[in-house]
Length: 319
Image 1 (cartoon, rainbow, N blue to C red):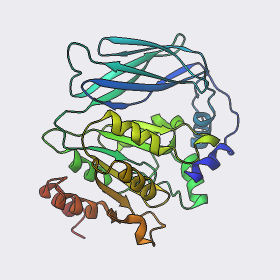
Image 2 (cartoon, rainbow, N blue to C red):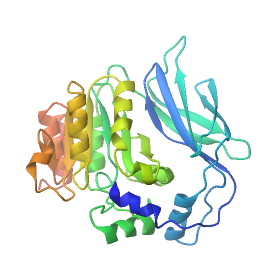
Image 3 (cartoon, rainbow, N blue to C red):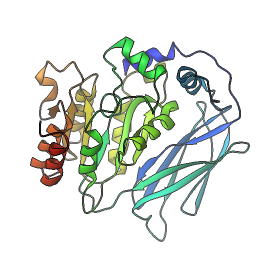
Image 4 (tube, one colour):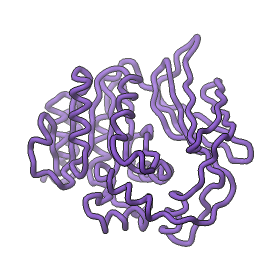
């Protein structure tokens, strides 16, 4: 999270184009869905280089006071964007529950192309849901190495950023349930990168994620994840599986939330991304170097099928 704060000082003002409305992928229940997004005064245009494109994404100006119409499964909600361009609308099922699985929501602002986003509605019978980090958990961001981190943030995109090998198959094993769980991505990655993150996940065949990224700024340099995860735990029923990495504060954040919600946290998996020499950080957690190790532990805990864990071993050559 601290490394992302450094990005604030590196973003310069660049040329921008027409207004843009963004709508973020979300998860919800058959009774209630909350959708969030952002309105930009002028959206990032294309660029001749990856660095330019990333800078334009990060420096786009927010539109305060934009009238937004959000539509979901026949319902409409009207809202005005806040000082940071953000907006949020909650929809409640009336006569009939929202259908389980993937649906599409839409947000519209005058003068901008409508935005669409997936909404994954959780089955009441799902055995758990999954909350995951992004940087150095599913994508190699090198947060613990300043020079490599800056190169990744500005010099790479969804096509070139390296995936953490084996994480997509591990998540697909977690998804392979009679009643499919939903996945939420709670990350310090900036909300301006939501399209980049979506395309990265799709490119590497991850399950569909609701995205709850950070509104990058000086007031969000720490303590961002806890309120977002608390809100998800209040919104979604049943146990949760937490997945993160050791590079920054995921073990401490997840331990805090486990203490607050002792009956809700089913398991915690932490990828070794550095700063892992102190075993007390990982008490009652599974610390793993490769996802096949997480899969073994998940199979023992009854979270995934043993056959799926075995398939992950075979795909990796049984090492």
